Image 1: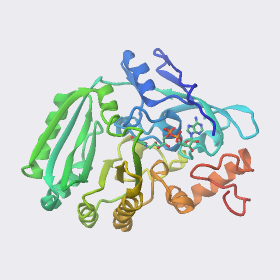
Image 2: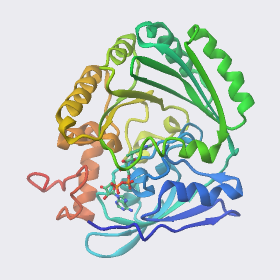
Image 3: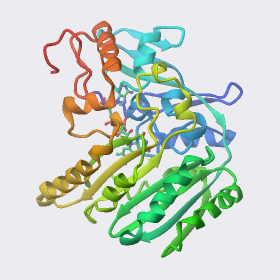
Image 4: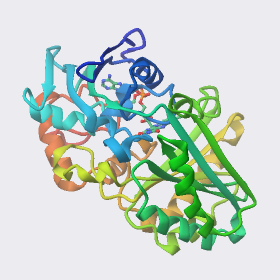
Length: 360
Ligand SMILES: Cc1cc2nc3c(=O)[nH]c(=O)nc-3n(C[C@H](O)[C@H](O)[C@H](O)COP(=O)(O)OP(=O)(O)OC[C@H]3O[C@@H](n4cnc5c(N)ncnc54)[C@H](O)[C@@H]3O)c2cc1C
């Protein structure tokens, strides 16, 4: 294992609206460095996630519907290749490598520096949640889905199901008053048993799940992309075992503006990402916890249009095939032939070289 933890520096150029992050930087450091200038780029929802893995797999966050995925905001990468060369990849230099780094994961080298485009970002945010008992949540969830289709890009619709409760709402980035205006449309869901409208800074929004997603727990997850959230898919979600927590996060907006062939990241037409997750502490519970999560994900499988490479766990080669359609996987394999023919970087969701009989 190559430990990039000591390489965590961030540099910001506020005039050019650029930031560079070293390969081992965490999202929290990136957000904290850009915020004083009123700037940000898309980063994930938990601040102790690495910039590296998140960006190389795609990078979904609350700004993505406005500004694209983290990988869509990449301008260049400095990469140490399998042969030990240090190369720059951008739209102008090593452009095929740059294509593969935007969604292909850590398959093509060690990225020692990421250069990101930054955006003027309002420092305020609003989280809107409405709770419904799972037993009566079918109609509200279907209306929530319909509302998500025409939602402004500042709103990222979210839903979670667990412990007998379905929570429907959205996260709003920017002026909370505008968010509250939009929240009025949620009255169409019916009367919830609880409502939460929580105003925060954008930075606090980015950290709000840090504790609950702490490092000391055992965890397991499975995911799907869903192009159309049918009523049947919603019913399957609501029927999950209450011990697991499953969530939906809306895609669309600027994510779907980027041409599919522009990056290795696939599934830009997904309406939602579904993830079922379970966390526990007693190793004796491993089997039952994982089996329950697998069963839940299996129930959503008929509605799946693929998977996010960063949400794969023990899915193996089949998972890689769900993350990339055949033509993309073939192009990624050709890139692997060119930059890592011996599959040095294989302890990942592996893109095997096309000449390899099997992945290592
Ligand atoms: C609590 C939690 C919350 C999450 N929230 C989000 C979210 O909001 N949005 C989202 O899109 N994803 C999210 N994810 C998924 C996340 O994107 C993946 O788990 C991702 O792999 C994390 O990257 P990392 O660098 O932290 O992890 P690591 O385990 O260190 O790395 C993951 C993979 O990337 C490779 N890699 C990492 N850095 C580099 C580098 N510099 N150069 C080359 N290869 C590298 C590693 O070798 C490994 O194969 C979340 C994950 C967790 C655990």
